[in-house]
Image (tube, rainbow, N blue to C red):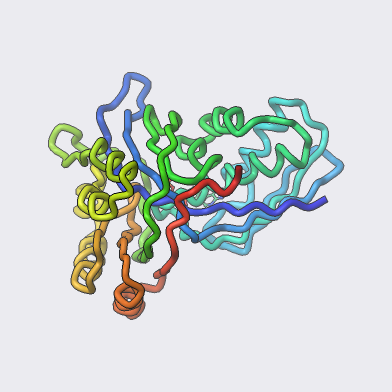
Amino acid sequence: MQILEKAPAKINLSLDVLYKRPDGFHEVEMVMTTVDLADRIELTLLSEPVIKVESESRFVPNDERNLAYRAAKLLQDRFKVNKGVNIFIEKNIPVAAGLAGGSSDAAAVLRGVNRMWGLGLSDDELAELGAEIGSDVSFCVYGGTALATGRGEQIRFLPAPPPCWVVLSKPTIGVSTQTVYQGLNVSQAEHPDTEAMVRALQEEDYEGICANVGNTLEGVTLKLHEEVGQIKEQMRQAGADAVLMSGSGPTVFSLVEQDARAQRIYNSLKGFCTEVYMVRMLGYRENT
Ligand code: ATP
């Protein structure tokens, strides 16, 4: 028995960090949306209770450190499953990029293995379990567009953004989310207007969305890696409607309505950066 799952990347249209909680996590407000750049997850049923991970990517661990492995292990242990699974990951999403690739793989495994092992769990139950693996996994179980609060596990669905191009560019550096959070001074950082972003989405107001993109972590990563600022500037000059770093970076994305302009941004970055993608916004929930 084989099951295929698509694991799309997310971008943060806005990301605000409110404060550090007593449990060590940060309280956040994130408006997230999925884009059409996805890993492909191939699950094969194994009759023995073993979990195997395979990937051709040299950036992804093939053992229990892989978030996809941890997702299957969590379901296997929690529901005392005596079957196993082989997880093949076709890695298309850049790793350690701020695009939640690992979280999306984990969410895809939760969805697929739930079906494969006949566990009968709802998406809400999977999202709750996903929060034990990582803060972005709950959102990735659903996909689409949502406001994520708490440490990222409390999800409120939002309408999809109006269709547009998303040009993504990742400089050849990996950024550790932990390092970026350590460098953050919440009281001095810039904070986006989350409410204005939510309103713009509800009103299908593309200009409003573009005017309100913002990321509290951007300032920290910009100081650590000047490439991020250079890409932002290049995208702006090539005519992007909005430019922002996603998550803790270093991927920068631009939103663009016009086809020709999106192509121009893509071309202008292609000579400068190896990882450049021009994709459509997904924005709606594909998995339900
Ligand atoms: P986020 O936006 O949620 O912070 P990210 O895009 O910054 O995520 P990931 O691509 O998820 O980061 O990878 C972060 C780290 O997790 C990597 O260093 C990698 O070794 C590890 N990892 C574990 N499992 C995976 C996976 N399935 N895919 C990618 N990375 C994984």
